[in-house]
Amino acid sequence: MNEYLRVPDPGEGLRLHLNENTAGCSPRVLEAIRALGATDASFYPDYAAVERETAAALGVPPSRLVLLNGLDEGLHLASFAALKPVDGAPAEAIVVEPAFDMYAACAGAAGGRVVAVPPRPDFDFPTEETLAALTPRTRLVFLTNPNNPTGQRIPRAAIEAIADAAPRALVLVDEAYVDFSGETMIDGGGLDRCPNVVVGRTFAKAHGLAALRAGALVGRETTLEPILRLTPPYNLNVCAAVALRAALADPDHLRWYRDQVERSKALVYATCDRLGLHYWPSAANFVLIRVGPRATALVAALARRRIFIRDRSGEPGCAGCVRVTTGVVAHTEACLEAMEAALCDAA
Image (cartoon, rainbow, N blue to C red; front, side, top):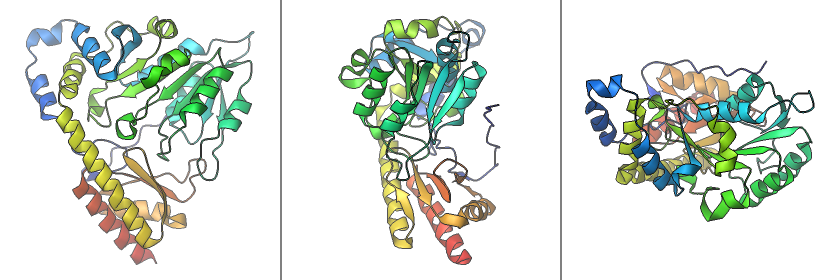
């Protein structure tokens, strides 16, 4: 049975293991939450303003937007909407690995059968292998652009080819890290070119709203209709709604954090080059590094110093790999110093 296991809270320390915004949200978010009154908590929220402003920020009309209690809710809703049995047998969901565990968990919960597409050795996107995995029972395809944990992009032509080859399937393009990559299927008429594509967005990563749970699905109205029928009427709590509006209204904070991420990635690349460690240049806010058989020991050694990174050795194609969140430059510097010390001690 596919199941998503919540990562245990490691306690106090430097959290570089979950790709969170390590600087925190915009100060405007806290101001907006503090401004809430007693009746804001006791009345059901009105979503008109947050829907209008989020749609404007994403460059779509509100009719093409579904707000979510975190993008995870969107994965569940899409799975239950798409994975109805086909001729009495389970529908199929394609998962291109390595991938977020929630894809398989949601597909399994909806009664679907998961078809995994293994990665290529260099993590180039396996377009031909994904196309070959499609069958008449395929009703859902999960794609992550850029990928987690590799940080690699999916060529737009590959997404379009898959959508064209599976017209009866929902192609869910998870763009959780798009604020760092800058490439989206929403731009350039992508949703009109591929009507069966739905784009998933989260405001957890770049905007720092992970604990508030705010996400969205974007797609054509007819494609979103089956998902909307399953969406609870008041799924976004009032704190998340006002926080999302405040975060979107502070582009300077977002630009500052993106700059920190880019500078941090450059520091990671330089350190890996100096230490002879293989890494994959990333379009996200993390870097996957291959340290070999020392991966688990390195994660443990840093944890003893209260610096937490993620062991990804168990993921398909990721043997010997760790993933490091690249956020605030000072945090990255502290992590790299500890990594180098731990690796030298183990040499």
